[in-house]
Image (tube, rainbow, N blue to C red; front, top):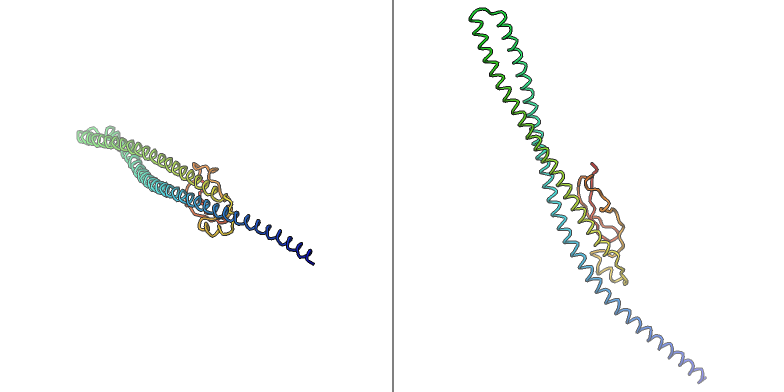
Length: 245
């Protein structure tokens, strides 16, 4: 019996030593986990701050784009007004041409039929009237030429404004790509303990699903409509809504 008791004591002693060893190992793991948690919290805070800064840049670019769109609308309205004026001048020119032709016919008729001084005076007055109309027609042609030149300048300004808008859109897409890279970096960090999910839940600890890659977009073939924030499996992502031309 004594031998059996000694053997049991030895077995229990070995189990106790093994338990102590496992306890020390677990304590070491707990300390390592705590250190890793602190590192992840610091890294998440840094990435979040960077994303906020990039978001401010995006807002600035969006403001520039809205300003460019307003300028384009103003130019389009001005072009439309100039086009209406040009059409009105062309109609007036046609009316002057008809009146001029009728006066020429009257002069020819008077010269052919009239032999008296009175008829000659009427023909001279008609010639003076025709010269005035010709002068007015010349002025109208010059105004039409000036209006066409102004319209060409407005068209050039419109095209330049559209080009500037496309450049703003390209800058926004590039900034969105940079934010997406920071987002993917944060979401790829492995979180070991379950307690960390609560610490960084405001940023997101799961692996994201890529909804759209802006770097594959062709900004010169799209019009910007809106920008929305989408949360995908715990990670926030900026998505731009575009419309094909």
